[in-house]
Image 1 (cartoon, one colour):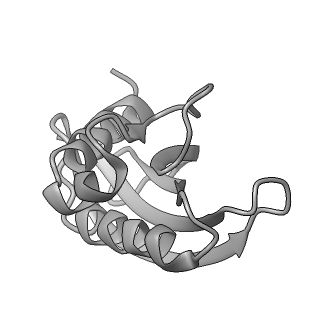
Image 2 (cartoon, one colour):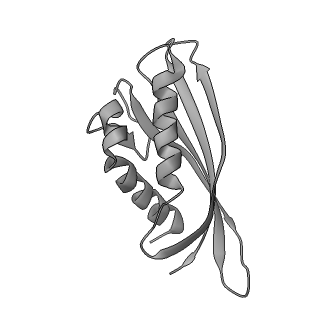
Length: 132
């Protein structure tokens, strides 16, 4: 399986298993692709970039992920509550078939969408993987 798919499968599973996140999003509020016709709140992996990163003669990759946490209110609080859970879970992520290291929370941005008036928090993550 491709390293992106391995990381995303593990991340989505971890997010869907978190009671605190599910209390905000509901049982079907985590996606690895943008949902159609699904109102917020939800979390979606908006982007996942992969760069080769070989070290010590071991092939590996650098992953850069962007997760969007869409709230169902014009207040940033719910979007940021979701972002906080996403970061906490990502920092302890395990992906079967890969060894993950150097998992970093790069930044969290927040804003109010001009079209909908709803809040969104964007979480940027970076991690390295090697075959495991």
